[in-house]
Length: 194
Image (cartoon, rainbow, N blue to C red):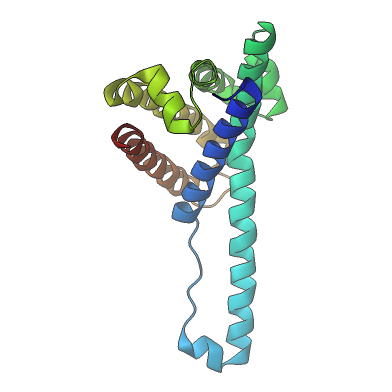
C-alpha cells in the first residue's frame, strides 16, 4: 500500500494525464501538407505554427493542473494536520475574478472532498484507490458528475471576464467541458472493468 505522499503523487500524475489528454483534444495541431514541404516560406510558417501549438499545449496543461494541484495539496495538508483550507485564499492565489469566487469555492470544495476521500483510501494505483473508496462505477460516476457540474458553473462565471480578452472563449470552454465529460466517463469505465 502507498503512503500518503505517494498517493498524492499518484493523484497529481492522474490529473496531469487528464490535462494532457484534454489539451490534445482542445488545441488543434497544424496540419502539414506535401506542398508545404516544397515551398520553403510556407514550410517555415508551418514550423512557426507548430511551435505555437506546442507552447500552447504546454501552457494549457500548466494552467489546467495549477488549481487542481493547489486543492490536492490542501487535501494532503488536511489529512496530515486537520487544517481546513480557506478557499477564499486559494481563489486569491489563483487570481480568480471576484464574480467567479463563489463558483470557484464550490468547485474547489467538491474537488477537495474527492481528493480527501482518495487520499484516505487504501491502494497502490489510481484504480485501486477509486475502487476502495467508491466501491462501484455508479457511485464513482456520481462524484465525477458533481465535479463536472461544479467546474462547469465555475467556467460559466469565468466566461464573463474572458469574453473581451480571449477569442472564441465560449467554444473553447465547451470543448474542454465535453472532453472532460467523455474522459471521466471513460476513466470510470476503465477503472471498474480492470
